[in-house]
Image (cartoon, rainbow, N blue to C red; front, side):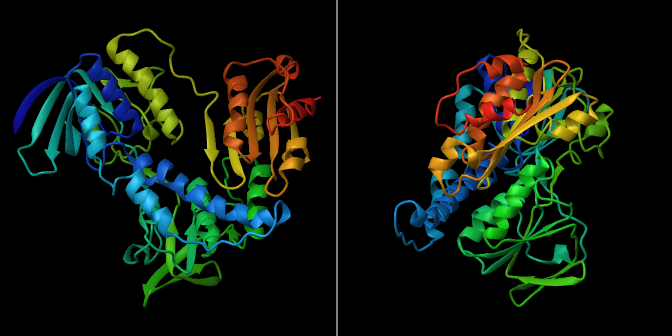
Amino acid sequence: MTEREVDLVVIGTGPGGEALATGAARAGLEVVAVDKHLVGGECPYYGCIPTKIMVRAADALAETGRAAALAGDVSVTASWAPVARRVSVEATDHWDDRVAVERLQDAGATVHHGTARLAGRRRVAVELADGSEPVTYTARRGVVLNPGTRPAVPPVEGLADTPYWTNRDAVRTAGLPGSLVVVGGGPIGCELAQVFARFGVRVTVVQHGDRLLPGDEPEASELVAATFAEEGIRVLTGAELTRASYADGTFTLAVGDETLTADRLLVAAGRTPNLDDLGLETVGLDPSARVLDVDERLRVQDGLWAIGDVTGRGAFTHVSMYQSAVALRDITGEDGDPASYHAVPHVTFTDPEVAGVGLTEQAARDAGLTVRTGSTRLEQSSRGFTHGPGARGLVKVVEDADRGVLVGATVVGPAGGEIVGLLSVAVHAAVPVATLRGMIYAYPTFHRAIESALADLS
């Protein structure tokens, strides 16, 4: 085994790992970046980017159905072929990371495809995918962990023996099934369920919890569930898949007292952190851990940083990117603010979109705050009236009444992920509610509904 000394080793090149490795290399450090799969991680190949292409196509079909009430008769024949082409050719280059690798190399980093494991403090053993001689690196500055997560597979009898889909298979499909069962009613499950339903697939969602999108406000869950019902998506809540089998092109699924059949089964029941084969025990850490404890500079211990999903601060690309900048400053000795997570935004790209920032009402109450809430229906706003079909939604704000600032907010509706931007600033900067009430809100816009939600606080 070859032994080499470098400044920094980055294990895992999801968006945060790639950004940190790039920044460190451009700062003059000798950087090695290792990924066992594709440089760029889940987001550009199987997550954020390809799924939003799918969502855009499905939303276009939905808009044609609303045209009769707005502009006259429109007919459309749905086809999956343009979607599959955009995902395969335009978004992922047929799931080839050559461009991303070259981008890192051009910044000055050494890139390996292979398996990297900690081999002691500041040491990383790399087994290369091309079968060449393994390398052990000693990192003078240290090691950054960005291993990400993989789809969780629930311990269901018979499931492992079936050709079930995860999100990775769903985005790669070149054709549509006639029917689909989605296990999991979180963001991934909800987005993909609606996409396939709008292309004519008969979809059933099996959700273990009592509502869809359990991390969001209950009002948001109710609106999404109502939309799903109107679009013919069957939702089973408080339900659990207990047995699965596959024969002659059909899945047979035991869900409670009911037996479901479908052409395809999509498992979207959470994510598993890739911490179990990292050699954590060689640096005194628990290899069975689901998260790594990090401080405000993303340090796990001296010479070891972690960013991304495995820090437990939200499995979002934007969190990983944010953390990468904080960790990079610590590695290079630059000044800058420590990490803060009181205003993490998130968006689920269903129709209507569900966006949130900071604390939900229940989370704020659980934190012991004196809570006041205000809300308004989006379709009752002037913009909602002019928009017409598809304007269903709401704005809800959560105030810490003792301080007079917002600690959370939710927007459901068209462009909810864009509208929440204003509220993200308010929560992040602790802008006084009095100041927000004194603003001028453009008319007639969806974001003007924020003013109505603030007024409802009183």
